[in-house]
Image (tube, rainbow, N blue to C red; front, side, top):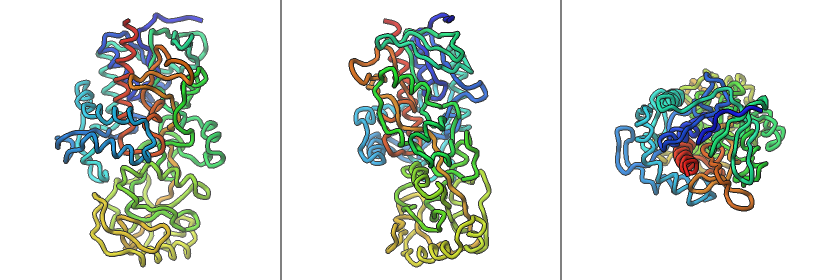
Length: 462
């Protein structure tokens, strides 16, 4: 087996977290290589499909409409996780988010204010100008300027770990190794591994749509766990949104997500509602809808809206099913017409007067339903009616590697690994156990990418 010239820091994974780690390590003077399993035109992992990151700020900025203190970000994060999070690491993410935008901007990443139709994000999130692809192009360009080596089609199939110390990564084919004095694991979760999803979810997984890269198969996660790393999180928990049921199985990205859910109703294939569509602001609830749909018969549901709201959410990638009556819409969606008409009629009777405001938790609600809709409830009575089929769209999984505040990977027994660090989705389960708030995955990747890169460089240069 041949071995390449050694590096100070080997970064495995070429998404946002990996590139942030590589650039931070390089800034600290380390010789760095990034091993990206995808070909060049697929580089960037799930980060290619993102739009923004969540960032605390003490006052309004040119990107955000008002202040968003770190304590509020932390409270939001704890709330959506039902307080099931590593309190120390969650606080670290909230505090460190304050300079993520300026750090990325110094590397050449450009930002813009929230787009029209991005519900309730203008205050809390900074948007990448050009989206995730532009973000990744900017980070790769910065890496090239700074002398970071990048290898594409470099799938890691083995880790040489001796007594908790990393020595080398073995590439696919088994005839080449990349040696390093420290390693950063940043290769994402296992959402692209259909067999693993089936193991976790059973038959329901056969109807899942994988929103992101097909290259996140969890191989590195499995190698680390088999080597004695301590796991964190539940393999059934994940960032899972409701995507258009017509989306491709892999790599459809953010455009397949449907943001109309809080503005209408959602029914299963029997025509019945099953959850409060207005439970909370959309950025705190959109990532639960994939799991909700996954638990319905056939893993399918249908969003129904009317003409009053159709210009209030981001346009869909696929055109809606449109009809002049609910009965006609039911036929087009292959739903039982009488059941849908009954559901809508009962919903309309339960709506109570209020002042509709999609930008806030308004007072438009229903009473007497099971479940009630607690916000943004309006009668569905204005043609044309639109309908969208919904499938579970898995973005990334929460089972990962437990780390400390220096991003060191912890062992299930004994001391932490001596020179193994982790960043991004592969360790997000330390902070995300069951919930999500929009943009926080990119924040975790940026914060812990920087920490992991700096920590790895310090170790390598001892």
